[in-house]
Length: 82
Image (cartoon, rainbow, N blue to C red; front, side, top):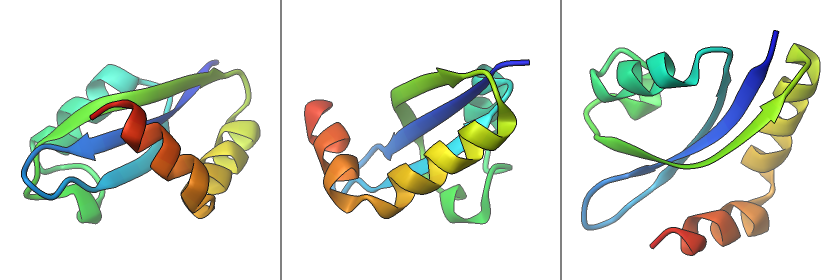
């Protein structure tokens, strides 16, 4: 089974980012935009700005953690999609 590590950017005047992983990316983004995703994402509209396909759940979790903690990489990805 394949997993995706993804980054979302909120729509609005002061955008923020969210990093997650899922085995069904399309459905997961839909849930975020319906307010049924992670608690942090509720009440905002989101746009997918980055995705990476990974073939192992453990590797996807590790990659998600790495991107979440690496502020420089996160900022670089965010600024690429202004």
